[in-house]
Length: 600
Image (cartoon, rainbow, N blue to C red; front, side, top):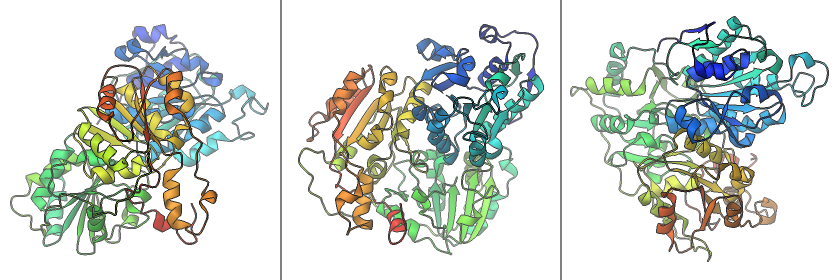
């Protein structure tokens, strides 16, 4: 993709810019971001952002339909995750989060980190104290004499933390180009500004190209040597294909992964976020690996050795995927269009592989098509038998405490009930461990996403909000624990009219912690696990906040009614799901790393 041509213009030919007061750095920045496709802002007004937010429309149906910059007012902890969900639902567009000075930036920080961990293009606009107050101990002092917020942000985001110190057209153009560059590299970018600097006069900026694309494709795959090199390397060897988050961003991926796995006779495994890039009918699909993974997939992944080749479509280095271990294959081909994804060192993951590592830069779909075009009967890897129908070994049944649903049966019923075009987000609760174990394969009717690397409780709710803003006509589900609920409950009134579908997994505990501590600290009394939560009437609370709400019956007798209500038009809906915290389903390989002398 060619660079966007950004220049200052003296005329005010854009009526929207004129209506927003085009004479300051604030209006110039908002206008330039709009040209980059950024129109959705989330956060709370006040302090250093008031002259920015006055340029934004309230988030209503008219603003969303007109595609003009708007602000969805929601507490900063939730707002920090909104750009993540917005990008996942839109497939290509970045959103922005605004934070006032001081504590607001800290609150949004978890969402910022998740955007970085999962390579999501997003804009975080952070207000600093006025430059004129340096050394005068201003309220919420974020300077080096206060909380040193710039130093903190630079430590995490490096050059993608932009300090706006000058709003002259030339400097502002440079800042906007750096924003564009970060979004093109599928990176979140932090724009930290002094309000008195952006408040100075500045003409509007004109971006002559269309909205920014999240990933640049800077390789000509037709001349790539990858297909021939891969053919030679895989001859007489077993090939295992790993599908990750990056690959799943392409709508072609379910078809392509099936064609490639069939051509190679290669088994397919996937991460939680990579599942959307697979076809559930692929006979060579062995399931999810890692946290909550399927027995067949984890056994296959553990069997990989020096004689094997791994074709990794993208790369997810996190503990819930690789469990702090290296890929043990003799050769790893890493296909990616990202320059420096999270966890890479100088752009690659050779440090996470025991054998040869080959990074192939380019659009993953195009690279796979080039591989298919050159097959011609020349592939001679070792073919693997089809995956079993059930990807899990038989487990001992557990007696469920009366008054709770059978969580496995509930998840299976849901898997069969999804309707086309749905999007789901799993929070840090039993759902994000057990769903993939029980359902085993993706559903073509719903895309699920989980920010499991940051693993921030309550974050999925903000992602669901962002997804609904990006795709108002889609049905957006969020599965969240009663512990996660405590992180965002105060935001429910602001979201009552969005039409979200929020399922609360109510087990009155931090169930993942408790299930783990039963194995890590078996000789410690449960009281000292500190995992018990007080009972909350989530249904009554939701109704008080303007939501519809339903209690799911323990015998699932009203399950069909719940699903009908989920897909009906109406306000946001909360469904309380009573769950036994001791019904263990999906595995947690991380427990191996927490046993003995290690710590949480």
